[in-house]
Length: 166
Image (tube, rainbow, N blue to C red; front, side, top):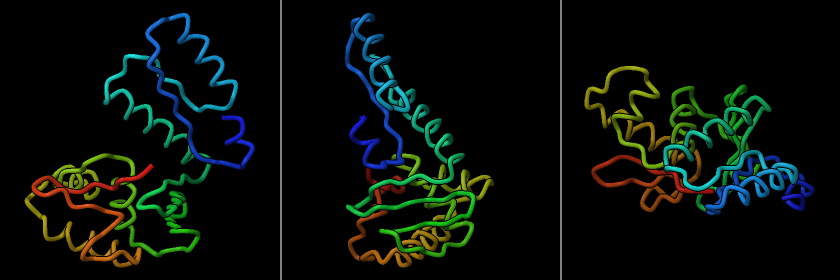
């Protein structure tokens, strides 16, 4: 962790331990936090607990001004205060709605159409898949993605979308 931080890494570091021994968990947590980890989760954790911890870390990072992720082998940086997105260091202009969609997809795993619509539009979902698909299409196009075989935002047939990355 110290080597990562010395390399000017400004992202988040979350450590999830599989140690069941409470004494070992305490030693690991103290050690990792002192070394620069942003969060330490002890075993056992549900997927929901891990996801809310990640969301909390992202909120902290947003207060710092930006966060970065790797998706499809490319680096995507988001500066929420400016509603700015950089793909491999190149700024891409998104509308307010496109930005909200992209940010939501990055922060969540598989996102059903209904969940995406209600989170981004702030309204009850009324089977408006065409509107969502049109925005996803424009986001992909702006990111220079292959519309026939996208690498950033994946379609999950019958469910919704997935932005897979690290």
